[in-house]
Image (cartoon, rainbow, N blue to C red):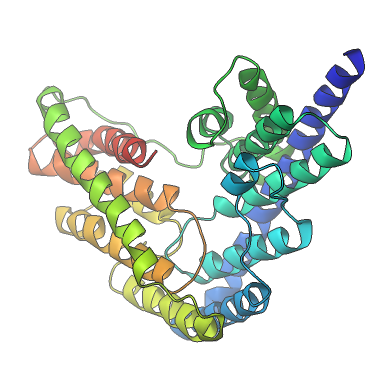
Length: 350
């Protein structure tokens, strides 16, 4: 009993440290890829994006011709579903390459699955119980998310709410400790600051009346976003031979669209910054609410792999900011509703 407790504590600490190193390293790596994909003033951004997308497509072709890459949920649900380190890390790197090149997907899935793979292997090697292995793998996925975005609480919530594990009092301290260790471990690379700087905002009384309407709009937007992402399963590229062409075309297409609509590339981080900016025009925000889901669906349909949490967050932020301007709450109140809209749409997806 005492030995099993020591092993569990050791795995939690080791898993948190590993997730922190993985999350921090991937945050550093994607910044380097984004600099290269930007063309550095030498290559046109669309051409650079196409090259990055084609390379990612070739990587997925090579990986998937040997069979599908196993997901975290499958490993948590099934005792025999291992997460092989080599294939899982290769898939995570290809996600970073595609997202860094500009494809409209989130980067949060890569550190989640890489961290989960490490804990899956360690848990099996040390022969912990199957219940503990499942919780540890799920907690590692949440810790990877916590590390890359400096959000330990979000890592805990992701573990307990988004992962298919039993919500027990035993799972809570494991998830909290692992996400906390991962976040602190990643600080030397990602820093201690929040991802977004929230500007000074004014509270307008009309915001209180807007809440029910914004909630309605957010639920509708979230449902449509989710339905659109799920619909890609019926038409996405599944033949690995076409992946270099399809992923390359999707990446180049998103970057080409960004020349007209700034911020639509990648995980949508720039869209959130636009939504939090009181000076952002209503027309731009409204177009982004429509364009980002369509580009994200096209990216998934190309056969690329990546997260949808942060694109949904971006759509919700743009929706909330646009609602504030439409209702006449004032530009200074837009950041407040951007924050609320982002949380509402994200909650619908989860």
